[in-house]
Amino acid sequence: MSSTTKFASESGPAPSVKHTQSFLPGRGAAPSSSDYDTSLSVEVRKYLRTYGLTPPNVESFEVQAERCLKQLEQKATAIDKYLYLSNLRNNHTDLFYRLAMDHMKELTPLVYTPVVGEACIRWSEIYQQPEGLYLSYADKGNLASVIQNWPAQNVEITVVTDGSRILGLGDLGINGMGIPVGKLALYTACAGIRPDLTLPLTLDLGTNNEALWEDPLYMGSKRPKISCEEEREFMDELMAALTQRWPGIVIQFEDFKNPFPSLERYRNTYTCFNDDIQGTGAVILAGVINAVKNSGIPVKDQRAVFYGAGSAGVGVAKQIVEWFVKEGLTEDEARKCFWFVDTKGLITLDRGDKLADHKVYFARDDNNGKQIKELIDIIDEVKPTILMGLSTIGGVFDKQVLNRMAELNKHPIIFPLSNPSANSECTFADAIKYTEGRAVFASGSPFQPTMYQGVLYHAGQGNNMYVFPGIGMGTILSKAVIVTQNMIYASATSLSTALNEDEKKKGLLYPDVSRIREVSVIVTRGVIRAAQKDGVDREITIREFTDEQLDEWIRQRMYDPRKVHDSLEKEVKGLLQNAVSRQ
Ligand SMILES: NC(=O)C1=CN([C@@H]2O[C@H](COP(=O)(O)OP(=O)(O)OC[C@H]3O[C@@H](n4cnc5c(N)ncnc54)[C@H](O)[C@@H]3O)[C@@H](O)[C@H]2O)C=CC1
Ligand SMILES: CC(=O)C(=O)O
Ligand SMILES: [Mg+2]
Image 1: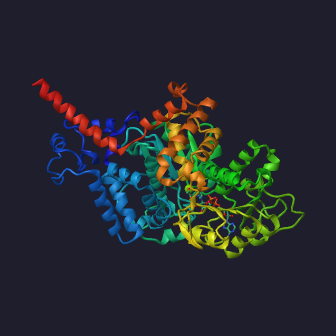
Image 2: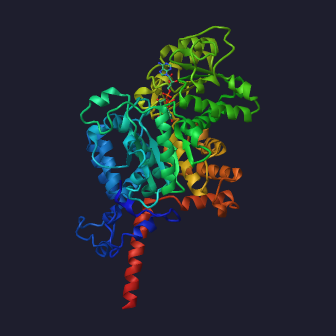
Image 3: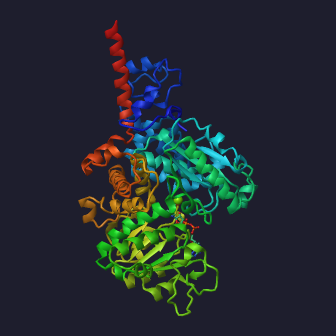
């Protein structure tokens, strides 16, 4: 938690000015991390009474950044780097975000997937400081009063997990806190939501991971996960308590394991969305739109095998169905373009087991009694143009599978989307090698470029980080009462249009991560427009804006760490000037 957290106020134009105002001397509050910025002038340091508390030189951001990058480089392991960056974020918030924004590509894998996966596995071992709110089942009945302990006056967005399915790593209990922390850091870095208005929230509802019960360092309750009914009662209380304290709060569900259906229960009554179902659906739809357009194969001839039929897989396929329908197919024709595979093989209606509710929609009924177990046999049967991996099973798209996809297609669309990298259904290097460089590829976690027969190939990253920041920002800025399906769909179509000319020429599916702020403006605009169309927006002053006006209005509302420094300098110097002229 940054020390700025205490002084949060509503977001608005040039947001950081507002919170720095509360730190001026005589305000009776502790200084914020911005007050110790080594780039502040001597004049300002003296005014803030931090003069002498930092080394004497007034530094440029470039020098500060060089020092940080050097220190980062000296950390021996990925976890050391993760901890270094966590400390930087907590103690020098603006400097961290400036660095993150300037080095998105290098830093994202360290604060998010894949390294956040290891951080979560080892969370109770590497724990150093509070960074979010923990609510336990034992707090049931008192959630509102525990929530009062959160020091920020306002919170605009929370990411909440119960840790029961963290990335593809299974049930990690409260160790999953790294995910809300990491996702919210991206909300700030990618879409400019003020860091002090974000709430990482982890629910301690027990865990079925028995290794955690045996771990003396584990910091959560050592009891089995509560029942679905108990979870429902807890979540009902939580949703009411969060919204009671912060009426406009956007609630993002993250990495909950089925079966408790939070999304269905709350989507029409609270401002909430499920990132794994909806965010993932949107980001993959954007990539698929571009991949299908590049392939030249019409939508009606696309056949997709989904390896993994969990909440993410089904969420993705349902978004694609919506696009296929908009492209002219009937819903039934669109649905029939999908074949799902789970641990028991191809999902069919007559397989003989009781299918979970969410699997029924895509279960095949045209298999003539034939049940197929192995992926390679399913590929032989279906002859897919698209192969998606959302199974958590690393390496399952092996040489044989990739070779076969390449035999069947000129440009097979292969998306191994499970996280972190070790759970990816295949590596980028294998996908390129075993398809002779012809795969159209996107993975959940980032892969380095790979060389094949003298050509350097670049991997796309199909990760919900391209859309959730814009979905959250668009919902906050439009003051939408609920997050409608059209808002989610708009995030996908907006993202699909965000490629620049160079990226289009290269046949990329997603924009370069280093352009993510620019991309988030486009996604945010799409989300706001859909909220307006659906009539769920309450920020009526922007309804008549042109797209250009709206983009500028969004940009002005994005937290910009550079402005924190400039505003503080300007503000203090203005006050000093006034004091002099009054004398
Ligand atoms: N790229 C991205 O942005 C995102 C990626 N994901 C990834 O998707 C994966 C799945 O997430 P959820 O759907 O929420 O999990 P889940 O636990 O609900 O679903 C996993 C599915 O995989 C199937 N599965 C597991 N082992 C299998 C095997 N050996 N053979 C065939 N199927 C198998 C299960 O039957 C289940 O249907 C995770 O690794 C997660 O990291 C999730 C959300 C976003
Ligand atoms: C990226 C993400 O949300 C997941 O792997 O669960
Ligand atoms: Mg997730």
